Amino acid sequence: MSIKTIVMSVTMALSLGVTPYVVAAPVSAASQQATQSLVHQLTGLRSFSADFEQTTKANVKNNLPKKPVAAQHLNQKFTGVMKVERPGKFYWETTAPSKQLIVTSSKTIWIYDPDLQQVVRQTVSDQVANTPALLLSGNTAQIMQSYIVSQPDSSKNYYTLTPKNTEGSFQDLSIGFAKDGTPSVMVLNDALGQTTTINFSRVVKNAKIAASTFNFVPPKGTDIIDQ
Image (cartoon, rainbow, N blue to C red; front, side, top):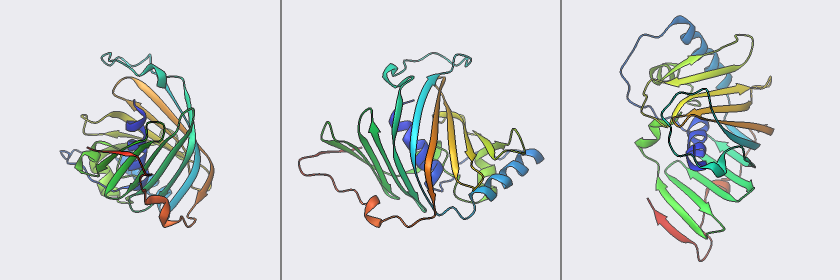
């Protein structure tokens, strides 16, 4: 899974509320209960900032078709900081081993590479429906419409979401919460048979984040690429 795909997944998981179209299907009582428990964990989470540590590994147990994998991303640790504010504001800065900044302010996504002096500008569209976009929507019915939610251990605040739409970039996404209700870990299994784990630390919940954080202005001399 590319850095861009990972960040987009986390972006939508933690900040937006887009509902992809899926065919309605019966939902088990266990899934309903897990969904309601997940929504309870997310209730009241208006903003969120943390340091992150991200690693990606090949999932050898996965029998999916083999496709080329960006080897430089496997077993490599990426660290940085992230900030989220509802609705739709997201800041993700990778500081090591290389620098990259991704900022979204609901309508526009900026992907900035300072080494290349280049920024990609994208419009947030319905294409984000293939990412886990409903986690902070707080709408149980919408989450159940798009994902099958399970809670492997009812005594732990850890949930796995499997998309009903199988055409997305990931197979499933799991999210775990600390005792204070803040997200502590996310695990993504993608369509290439890779597993990406993102651990959060130094978490701050519901603190005021400066509006300028989400207003990206390309530095002078930066090439802007529209996609």
